[in-house]
Amino acid sequence: MQRRGLLIILSSPSGAGKSTHSKRLRAWDPTIEFSVSATTRNPREGEVDGQDYHFRTEDEFRHLVADGEMLEHAHVFGNFYGSPKGPVKASIDAGCDVLFDVDWQGAEQIKDSSLGQHVLSVFFLPPSITELRRRLESRGQDDKETIDKRMMQSWDEISHWRSYDYVLINDDLDATEAQLRTIVEGERQRRDQQPDLADHVRLLHDEFTDGLKKGR
Image (tube, rainbow, N blue to C red; front, top):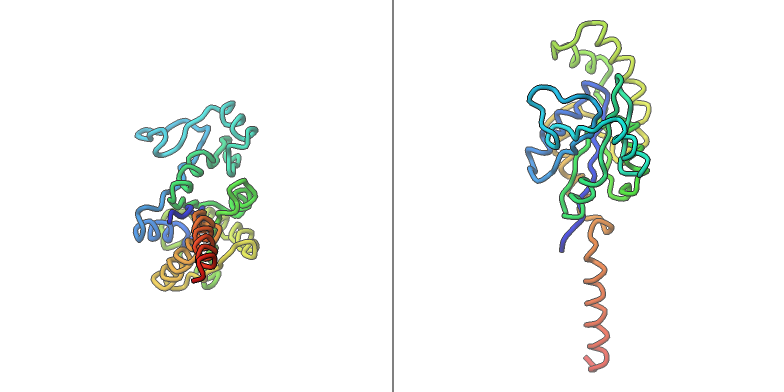
């Protein structure tokens, strides 16, 4: 039986593991698609429309939002970013899972959308605030001011942990990955993710009543 795909949302404060687990999840199951965002910013050198981003004008983007064709969107540093509904719906109708790397605000918008019933949301907590800062510093990508800003933002993200379906403490990458796989495999079997079940039950019913009529 064909199942519907899931909208898999992974969130965490910066440095707590959502990007790492996004990569690991797709390495485990390459059929999981990554949602390609739409943006109003100009393409950078080497970026391909439809592959890196769906590049849209501001008017086009605003019309998509007004028509309900964006699962989530936000205005960041002078540009709009969002997740177009059309490609995601086509993928989940074909039985493919779609992965989203968004913050709690994006997660809430997706859950409130017309595809919200297919959402699986997972939030990653760090083992400690000290460890979270250590991970940010160990990247060697940001100066102290940027790290301080990310740390201040981290508690705002963490404070929304209750709004997620599952919450994992990311203290061991391999163990947390195993938990995430188990969650995905289980959620794929949800009754509402299997639209053909109703037809199968009807066949069982017909077979059962036919047997009664024949005295079996």
